[in-house]
Length: 140
Image 1 (cartoon, helix red, strand yellow):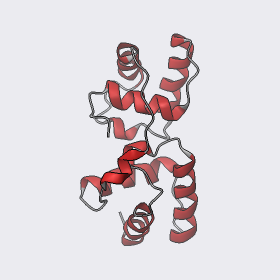
Image 2 (cartoon, rainbow, N blue to C red; image 1 turned 180 degrees about the horizontal axis):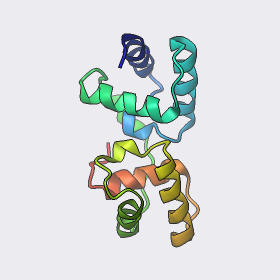
Image 3 (cartoon, rainbow, N blue to C red; image 1 turned 90 degrees about the horizontal axis):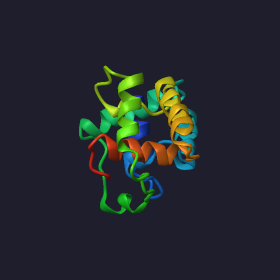
Image 4 (cartoon, rainbow, N blue to C red; image 1 turned 90 degrees about the vertical axis):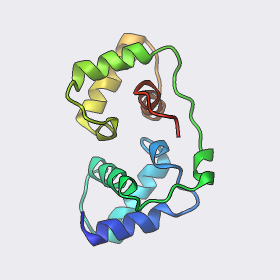
């Protein structure tokens, strides 16, 4: 990851309206973050590449998660963990981390199959939060 990518992401992430990293995917806030990143960095990346860069930055300790960032809340769906786990196993059996899913073709296949198989019409954001919950990750 280059210095421009790191610096622009870090500067954008400290804005007060940016929720905790796991609460960003499939929100208007992420879309705005992405547009601002492209404009400020002049680096051409996909939404998936930006997302994965944010994950790397947080794991490297370069993104500070402040307590007030957790106030943005979307409840995961309840009672669908088994179906979600099955869909992930079916479409991404070698997936090392759920962090690789947002804005990827694999996420879209899992999401589409979930909607068809569960009969539930949910937003991509709520489905992402459900994956976080089903994967055994603490809901940030």
